[in-house]
Image (tube, rainbow, N blue to C red; front, side, top):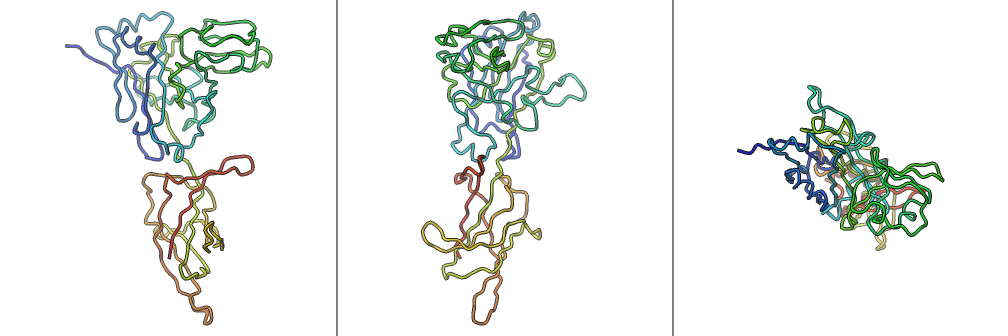
Length: 350
């Protein structure tokens, strides 16, 4: 009977949901990766939290005897058109993608056989961020236009793939063929270095690329990788919460206080505004961005409104109104002092 064992597993955690889930993410494999899986008799399986690669017990020697190493390459695409509304990352142009790897410098280092083993994040920091961006290219990309430099060195591990000066006509395929993956590029003129992520043409719509290295270094040899659990963690977006209270009788609210249970929340003082449709409203806004969540742990959210109902007698009436939380399909963004700011407008009609 064939015994299968875990070579490695990739799991996606999203702070918006507060758990591990692959519900909004499609993972796709390059043809070269599929060939490697077949050649080494590995099995790819999608899971509810990501995916797992399994190896056969009687074929593990193929991985133990690797010379030079192999790379498994995966693309990530969101299947939820509102994904970036509640995820704290910015979709990039075709020249940049988020890159995740188990190679040194890109991830945490942890021994899966250690009693103190912790899952390895395929990024530095609690969540992936702008530090995970790499230059992205496909087979027909003009290499000089991508790198914005002419004298370069392209290498991966100890192997140099190109060293010299570009004349501006070279396509990526001319130099790298179908050897997809991440390459280190030294830019001689600027003295800088870049990570160049070369992916198949059908990866063009991917926002992220995963490269799992096997065997090219001591840290990625079979014994070090087998049983590993890799994590990619998505941070939930924080936005300004704007509440607009619209009175059909055009009442003026002297004060509006927001609470979660008995805890008072920090919101601005009431401000009279005119909506785009000409209606008058009273607006309060959170004093800072608040994180979006699928389910909030706090108690029922409500507002206490103090209104001047009888202006002549100055008799104040207090009302308690239960409030909605942001609709992730209606998150908006704007540029404030050169940086993007996100907000959610919510309307309460009284």
